Amino acid sequence: MALVEIRNVHKSFGNLEVLKDVSLSVEEGEIVTIIGRSGSGKSTLLRCINALETIDSGEILIEGQKIGPKMPNLKEMRQRVGIVFQSFNLFPHLKVERNITLAPTLTGRVSKKEARALAERVLAKVGLAEKIDSYPEQLSGGQQQRVAIARCLAMSPHLMLFDEVTSALDPELVGEVLKVMEDMARQGMTMILVTHEMGFARNVASKIVFMHQGRVWEEGSPAELFSNPRTPELQAFIGSTR
Ligand code: ADP
Ligand code: MG
Image (cartoon, rainbow, N blue to C red; front, side, top):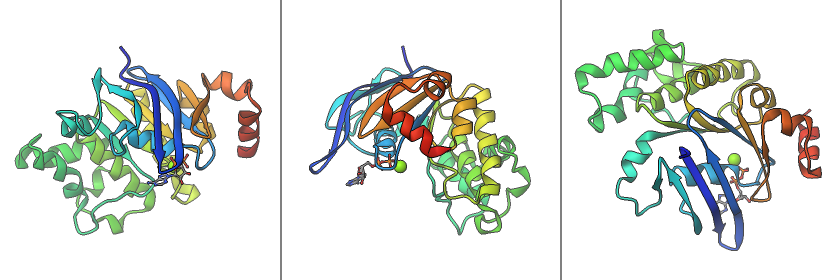
């Protein structure tokens, strides 16, 4: 069974149909990259996977469980699915350590005693062990985004969603965040990410999904999609990113 199974999903905001019959499956350990123009429904799809948005029809299953506002263990599901956005959303008045340990201690995943060790462990994974006692404002944008990723890792997610996590960063800071994501991919994390970093998509993704006007327009391996785009829409999109 796939880790994520999206079947015939429709989603509208008022009269605007944003997702039109979207189906997609993601196997454990896969790195799925969603590309497409602004407004094509990429963020909405990610938000539906994490039940931050409700769908109008179709279904989304994570580890075989149908997700939605009525699911019995929505909270647990959210803990298993980490999401990182373009804006880092760290708490400015809390040190890095507390930013990371807040959710794991509040949910009882770790005791207060174990919390610092957990923060140390996940910060080491993003190369920021030495920043544990800093405040967010003392960090660069790239470092803050790595802390945001570490904060997700502290919940031991089975799946990570990334929505344009490098788009707000100065160009020289993009690489360090992509590197962390590449390391996570190598270590077997299942990831669905929206990105404009075509180099990353080409080198790291196991599957590329091109969305256009709310539909999965093309889907395939990076080699298939980038070297041999079948539709004029994808050809034009690839042309626009060069
Ligand atoms: P993308 O991430 O590909 O740029 P989005 O999923 O953010 O696209 O948006 C798809 C469409 O849905 C856009 O036309 C956007 O304006 C619209 N949209 C997104 N969120 C909302 C919302 N909460 N209310 C109304 N319209 C929305
Ligand atoms: Mg978006």
